[in-house]
Image (cartoon, rainbow, N blue to C red; front, side, top):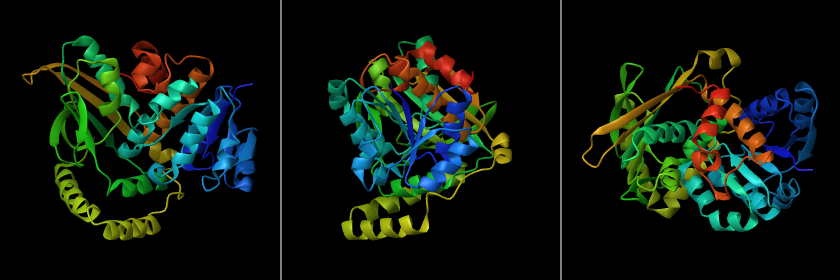
Length: 359
């Protein structure tokens, strides 16, 4: 019988996802590389089946899955460790969800589009706070202004905390190429190449451009869209600092031996499995996603702001919702899918609201 598998269940985000699934009546299989930690987690959440799997042994990941299953993977940094889970899902004929925020890995998932269609499965990368809210906000704005050709999307967090996995993913992307949508095509663009401000709950906040899933997903549902930029909210000084860092990292990345040395140093210094914000800290955090859509003259035709609480709580809740919906046959297509394309705007809006994201 088809099942939901949470790979990376003993990590910070994986644990939150497992709790959400069990609370809502699902019976997930919890998978990770440490059997003792798995048994402890299963007991803490009221009981669940467990399985040991490790990305360094791809056959163990493939053994987790059967046809019709749904895989949620949180095992990152995804550029380093994400490949085996993605390959296993496609080979098994299982639907795939991940929690990545790493733009280059999102592109990798979309390169599996034709293989996923052949296998009859859906691949949904970045199905968390990175980058469901922006896809949804842009979709709602484009419903109001279907003639828009440009979308600018910003993500903003007040009182944020970060997990070890998030920090490791950010470090892993430092020397990778970014991208944006220009003229209907995804083209190279370094991180923080653009800086702009948004009105966020009556306050002007700045952001620096980053590679997100919206560049790859929105034109599949809105083919008239020609240009997309995604921004990470940062204080103005930090945004300009990220621009300088991106320029320096780009220079380093052009020299392969230096790049490899820098990546090795970062991977040793920034460890992934080091926990994350406590529940009391997450309760203080507030997030916003803002989408502005414009015509070819730059006139803003519609703007939508979505609000939520902590990004980790939202990520866990929306991944649990997406996996349950996919298991019940709720995906509208196969291949590599954006959130709107996968579920439709109204169903996605309802799922996001259930996960705590509202207009």
